[in-house]
Image (cartoon, rainbow, N blue to C red; front, side, top):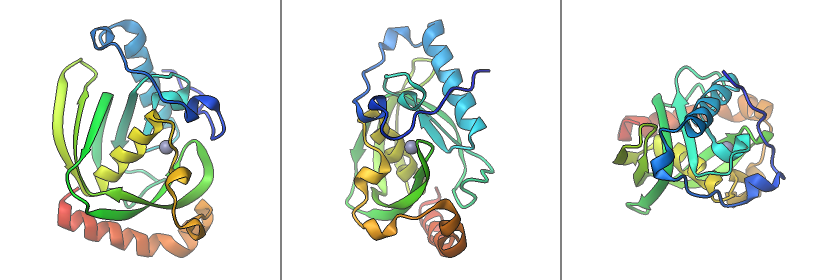
Length: 191
Ligand code: ZN
């Protein structure tokens, strides 16, 4: 188990486009160790996802997992998903105002517009190519993690700068209402 340091906003690696993983090398020790480190670091930090460049590995990979997460109690569950060289296609213009935080942006949250219907394709940790449709709140999580690979952090996507707030303020003033919005979303989309 290796819990790595999580790079913070301002680190050049977080602002750069990550490079593709050689698909033939996915089964090799080095890539498997990166995957393990992402999972360990994400779980240790109670994150819903983490990208490779957040732990200092400049390649196009991320992991996501949402169980009973104290950081995001309202989020619908998502099984552990390992994503390598992903592509995202927007399937519609339907959007949701997603209130987001990030392990690389300490104690800050804000609203970001995310697409609700996307198609994703990627390689999994075994090197198998996967294609699926992702809808609802889970689509927001996908887009947040994907953005990391292009050097984009959620503050760069914020259009309503009044929505910036600390985690404590979010919990105190917004979480109850926001959890209801997410519940509505999950009841419509199932995810
Ligand atoms: Zn993030």
